Image (tube, rainbow, N blue to C red; front, side):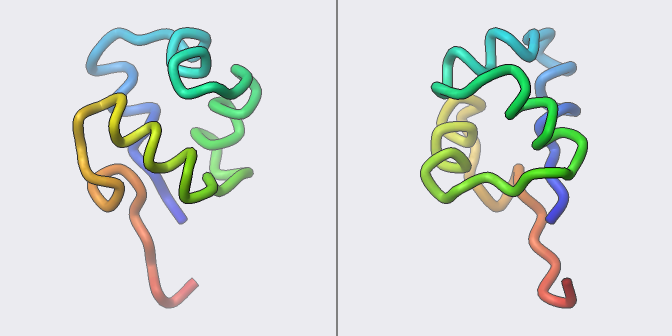
Length: 66
């Protein structure tokens, strides 16, 4: 599953540390999400979407073929 976290974070000039703190995870988790090495839980996806004021599906791009 791809996501737009890095793109959105950079647009809004938000540091990885700040996003991590706001959603209750470590900076390493944000790095892993941005690099596609980790898929967010539903709870984390919801927190990230709420942080950016968006819907989950606008941030996390799900491909049914995967």
